[in-house]
Each structure stands twice: as structure tokens, then as C-alpha cells.
Length: 183
Image 1 (cartoon, rainbow, N blue to C red):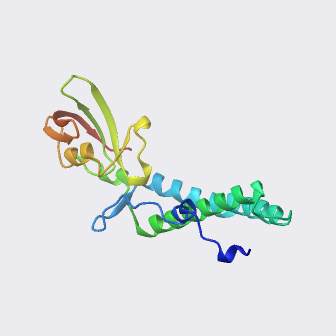
Image 2: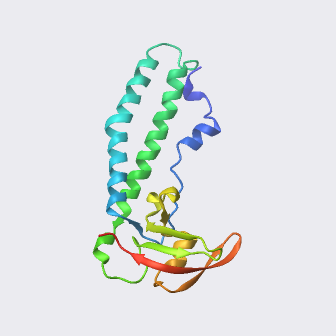
Image 3: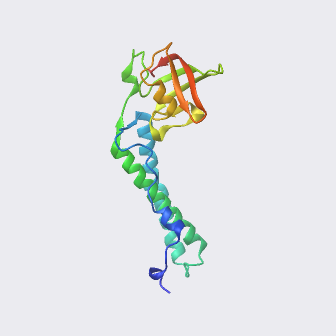
């Protein structure tokens, strides 16, 4: 029976959807120059290196006969869909990105996008975070999404200010110790 007449499985249908958009429709997609460059590099790598390699494997596997039981063909077709979904996502993000260079915000004492903020929590622990774009966030490296609850609470505050952060566990008061922008 031709595959044209078979029903797509639910997992295949899910694979073809775009990644969820974490940015509300009315909010700009701010990104640092470093984050923009990283997204561009990932897109370049996918289009020029990874995708052609997978297309070659799929072509080779398709020539091996019965595709319905061909693991190489099935796996790499799925990988190709994942790559195409990521390419669509990155293209959309880059098209809508607004680059904000924190280096141009020297001398500011307030917290805005791109700021590196040191604050102390109620339990006395000190944290240093950098407010970055949605796609750049990496908590292990101290980079938080500028739309996160902590970042929203920090916005427009100054050293010495205390702000309330609403979390799932409740409300916590944090004190801003320092605000800096990269040189």
C-alpha cells in the first residue's frame, strides 16, 4: 500500500509543528549581540552542515529498498523534520529580533535589558545574574530571561532598592546590591 494513503501517527504530526513561542505577541524579542550571533551560527550550521549530511543519509537509506522497515531511513527522516522545525523557529526569531547592546548603556544605575545584577535573597544568599533574551537564557551561567519573574521584578530598580518577586512558592523580597553593564 502506498504511504500516500496511510495515516500519519500523532508523534509525526507533533514533530512538524513549530516550537512554542515563549514571547507574548505584544512584546519585542530583545537579544544581545552575542545571543544574535549564536542564533545565526546555529542556523548556519544547521543549513550548511547538519541538514546536507542528513539529506545524504536519507537518500542513501531510501535506495536500500523497503522504507517501512529501514531504521536508517525512518530515524533520519525524523531528524530531518526536527532540523527543519528548528530552522523555521530560528529564522522567525532572527527576523523578529531587536538587538540591544548593553555596552551602550554605560553609566546607568538602573536595571534594564543586558544588565548584570547582584542581589541578596531573604535567606542571605547572594546571586549575580545577567538579563538576556529569551533564547539566550542559561541559569547555570547566570543568564536569566528578561521576561522571567526575577528579571521583571529587578527592572528599573537601583542598588539599595528592595523588590518583591512573585514565585510559585509565594512572594520573596530581594535587595539589589549592584548593577553593572559590560565594558
